[in-house]
Length: 260
Ligand SMILES: C[S@@+](CC[C@H](N)C(=O)[O-])C[C@H]1O[C@@H](n2cnc3c(N)ncnc32)[C@H](O)[C@@H]1O
Image (cartoon, rainbow, N blue to C red; front, side, top):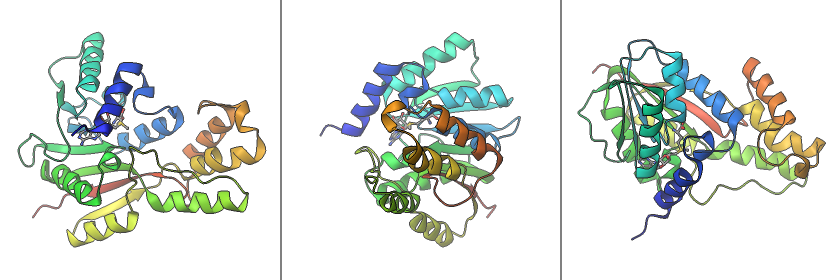
C-alpha cells in the first residue's frame, strides 16, 4: 500500500532541496524551535535527530555546539539525500551522518545517545499507538540520565486557538492531512505511567496567538501571504522575551531518562 505521508515528504524534498520550506514555511516558528532544542544540547554530546528532513535544523545545532556526534535519520530517502548533499557542501566530517530510518524501529542499540530529539515527526504517525511506539524507540536509544526532546504539535492548544477564533468569527484552523497532533493529556499520562520526569517548554504561545489570531483581526490576511511578514515578526520578537498562555501548538516535552 502506498504511504501517502512518506510520498508527501519525498515531494517536499524534491521541491525545496536544502531550504527550511522542505519541512515548513514558518521560518519564525522554526527559529523558536531550534533555540528551544539548543538549550538542551551541550558541547561533547552525542545526538540523534529523528525525522531530520534535509538537516536544516541539525546544521544549525552543529553551528551552535561542538557536538561529539550527530546522526540524523528520516524515512524519506530524498530528505536524506538532500541532507547528505548539504553536509558535503559544508565540508563536515564523519561525526555527522544522515541515514534512512523510521522512528518506529530505530536501527541503533539501546542507550546509544546523550540526547534524542524529534521536531514535528511523531505527528506524522497515523495513530496514538504508533506514536507511543515512536516515543518508546526514542527512549530506548537514549542513555540513562540522557534527554529526549519531543517538539511536536499538540491538540489542546489548537482547540484553545480555535475557541478564540470562533469568538471573532474566524474559520477554525485544521490539521493538515499528514498530521495527527498529540494530546498533551495522553502524553502526560504515558510519561507518568513510565515514571519519567519531564518539563514542558511552551516556546510558541505568544507567537501563535499573534500569527494565527491577532494578525487576522488587525490586517487583511491576503495582504501578507505566507509566514514571513512584519506582524509575525513582531510576535516572534515578543515570544523570545516572554511566553505564556497555552496557545502554542508547537511545544517541547523535555524528558529525562532515569538511571534505573
Ligand atoms: C516537519 S519535518 C522535520 C523537520 C526537521 N526535523 C527539521 O528540523 O528541519 C518531518 C520529517 O519527519 C519525517 N518522518 C515522518 N514520519 C517519519 C517516520 N515514521 N520515521 C522517520 N521520519 C519520519 C518526514 O520525512 C519529514 O522529513
